[in-house]
Image (cartoon, rainbow, N blue to C red; front, side, top):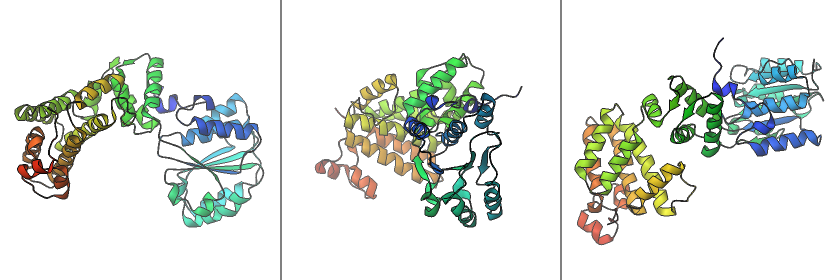
Length: 383
C-alpha cells in the first residue's frame, strides 16, 4: 500500500478535532444548529491553517449524509461537494459551466456545495460570471471560497460572502498536536525538537506535519534536535549559544572559534547570521520584558537557559548587536570576501563595549569609541 502523509492521515474529521481555529468551527456549527447558514462563505488565511479542511467539515455537516458520504466528502471525492482549483480552472468558460451545473439537484445530500480553492486566481471575467449566481444561488447550492490572498478577491465577490479569517496556529498548539501524532505513530521525540518544528511551521499545521514526516523518514525511533539540524542544515543551537556566551565575556578568540565551528559543519554565513539574529532577538525581548514574556516562542527548558543568558546583556546592547549582524548579513551577500566580514563581525560582537552606539551603526556613520562612550550609547554588556 502507498504511504499516506501525516498531514492527510491526521486531518481533522470533526469540528471538535480542529486545532487552532476553534472559534470558527464553533460559529459554523452554531449556524447549522440555528438554521442560519449563508449561501456563500469566504475563508481567508495563509497556507496550511485549515481552510480546506474546515470547508469539508462544514460541507459534511450541511450534507447530513451517511458514513460513506462523509468519508467521500472528507477525501474530496463526493459528487455533491465539488472541489475546484481556482488556479487551474480560472477561465470564464469554466465559471459559466459551473453556473450551468448549479441548477441540478444534489444526488445524495441536502445541498450541492462548491469549494473553490485559491479563488483569487480566477480571472476578472470568471469572477464577474459568478457574481449573479453567488448573490442569488438556487436554494440547494452553497459556495465556500478559500484564498491565501484575500486582497485579490474582488470586493463585489467579498460583499456576497460571510468572511472568516483563519489565524496562524500558535506554536504551542502545533507542538501539542505533533506530540499527539507521534504518540499514535509509536515514536518518541525530545520536546525541544517538537517545539522547533512547530516554530519552523510558521503558523501552518500542514508545514509542521510535513517537516515531521521528513524527520520520521530518517528511520530513527527517537527524534532529537540534532536530527532537525542535520536535515535542514541549521546551525547547531549549542554552537550559537557558545558564540553568544563568548561574545558576552569579551572573548574574541572564543567567539571566532565558535563561528569557525559553525561554518565548518557546512552552514552558510547567511544562514548562520540569520540564526544568530533570531537568538539575539529572543535575548533582547527577554532582557527587556522578563523571562515570563509571551513575545518569544521557547520551550520551558530553553526559556530558562535563554533568560539566564539574557541577564548578561542590556537590551540596548542587544539592539546594537542585532544591527551589526543585519548590516554584515546584507554586505556579505555582495562581497567577494564574506568570511572576512563575518570574522570581523564576531570580533566586533566581542568588543561591543568599545564600539559606536547603535544609532550610528544603523545610520551608517562612523563614530569613535571615545565619542560613543561620552554620548552614553556604547554600553552593551553588563559588568
